[in-house]
Length: 216
Image (cartoon, rainbow, N blue to C red):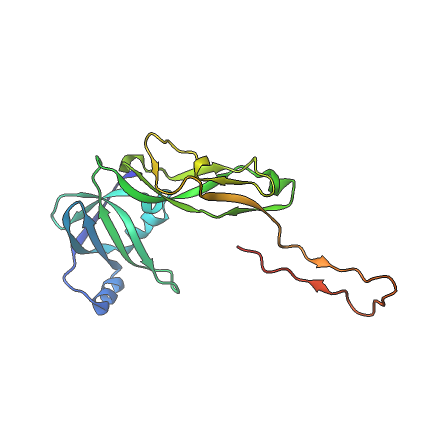
């Protein structure tokens, strides 16, 4: 989605881990900008500004303006980013320049809508096996997400990429349309308890046969 956000940045005059640590101590992060047939540029950007974009409703698919030094603004999108796995702090980002008149490839999330019959009436589990999908479209046509209706699914049923809801005149999906997106699985959370046979003593607790751990 195109936004009215403009971020100002400065060209980086240093490299290496030590320089990056000093940048982060100042609230900045190292960023690389590339694309549109221009040379890559190493810049320093305010970490909070990039983090706010990533946390926004459109997230990494937000399209915004980048001004480096006294240069003209470039239209960019966040192509990649790296977060400290322990502290959760943003460490680095890659920005890609965009032309608003040429198609680009991005990844968007998949959102399941509706409550499946197999979940509501048959104690099944909704398994969303494809959570993100690569598409190609003009920057102005990048959707927030693609939806798939799962309300009619029963146990054993599934939906595929062909069932996704989106504007096919503007967006091209770059995966096989037969790929499964979501399905209804039998619950693995129940435990089967064997009752003692006739004549057997019940001096101990009945053995519980444990199933494998359910998938997240």
